[in-house]
Amino acid sequence: MALIEQHEEIVLQPQGRLDITGGESLQQQWATLAPRRYKVWIVDLSRIEFIDSSGLVALVAGLKAATQSGTRLVLCGLRPSARLIFEITQLDRAFAIFDSYDAIARSFGRAQEVLQPA
Image 1 (cartoon, rainbow, N blue to C red):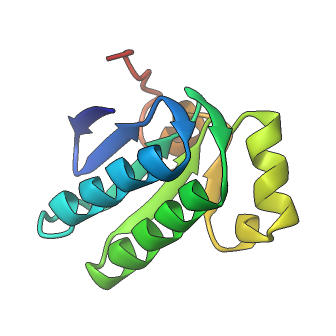
Image 2 (image 1 turned 135 degrees about the horizontal axis):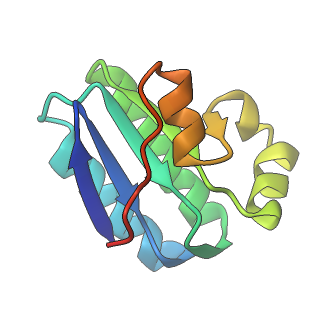
Image 3 (image 1 turned 45 degrees about the horizontal axis):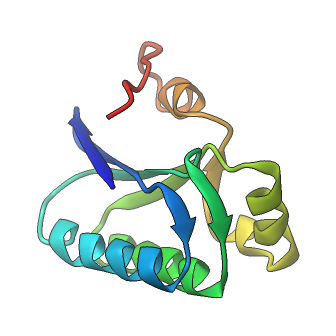
């Protein structure tokens, strides 16, 4: 999983499958990030090919950890199949979901920035 720090945010870029194994890896990241004082945790899901309930549980746990630490968690780059899962489970109402990292940068009022692949 790639981690990119910029401004007062951190970008997580999980890859492959967000299943039980990928979900556990993400859970470990939340534990590492929670004590730090980032304003925003961005999870770029553009490299995720598959997501199941374990992955959703990990993302919800991240949302809870972020909220408890006074941080905002946002998602971007969902593929159509992942977006459908979020809509079916109505998690699209719980998460701030953006099409791309650039859309997040525009939303936050910063100049357009491009994520460099890790």
